[in-house]
Image (cartoon, each protein chain N blue to C red):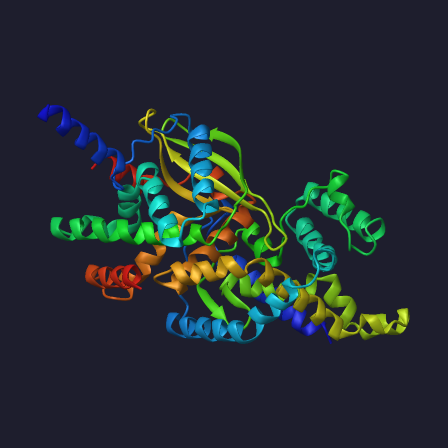
Length: 200
Length: 261
């Protein structure tokens, strides 16, 4: 009996825990992106508060975006110069920064209408899924390409978002490089900037 | 009178091309700074000016009924296509030039001076704008260093030369600034100030379409100046190549290193 109760409590804990999502996404890159878009649309169209929406969107991002990989890509060559403690600190800060930046960009949209157009397999590692944010009375249509990493075909991961041909990962990389170069290549300057952004 | 500046401009362009060692295939996404401190200050000044004047005007413009905004946008776009046409030709892009000329002819006539866009429905696709900075890029001129101009915004040495070139190549500028044409046509509508109305409307139209995206960039950047620079250079590179980044062979050496760690 004790074992049954323990198992039940464990299942409840897993199911209701906000940090654990059992949602499985399709391994087909085009369907994978469509599913993410649909899930995000439901959240953005819901009556939930901005904070709740941000938390739910963060969960999607953690499961579908290669946050750690993007973090190291963004750091550029500096990643080879920092020690293990700095790497750990950077990983934690970058994830917080990324999720805040990602969700804040998305929560500005209510009822976004995005249609997935097609997928183009670049090579074994990458597929570009092309989509379009449809125009409204106020905004023109926007082309959004999702660069999906497919090295593990069972678990695709998003590595970049290319909006109207402009890569977000590249922009972020150059932003970080600029902060480092204007601060004598000191990683602590970048940490301070990230902390300021997270806490604002 | 026009010949002397034109001569100087041709010398500068020739020098730029002579000094250049790059080619279109090597178009870069980065550029050295010309004078970063000054550029950062200029960007701040531009953003203050934007907050005080351009953004409120753009918001007001956005409050206009959709048909008026769309009509103005189409009208301006149609005039702007004349500069695109000149550059299509200079780039040797005959297909592009034919498309641009076809669009202009249809939209100016059937589309009532460009207010409507029947050309798209008739199979003449709307293509991206071309300017002389892009043409110099296609000819192989190096990007040069990056800086920010007051009011006009981010640019590079090559694109700054391109801006001057646009003046000589833009038929709208030539017609509105040539007093002889006014006398021949006998039409006050071709006076200089109309050129600035046209450029102003174009700027306000662009700003009104990007209110949220610029706001989002400001709110989510930890170094706004670097973000603007990166986006500007990426945008120029893909316009010169006439190909979006995602379709090009990206340099994935960083990613490969990360994957192999």
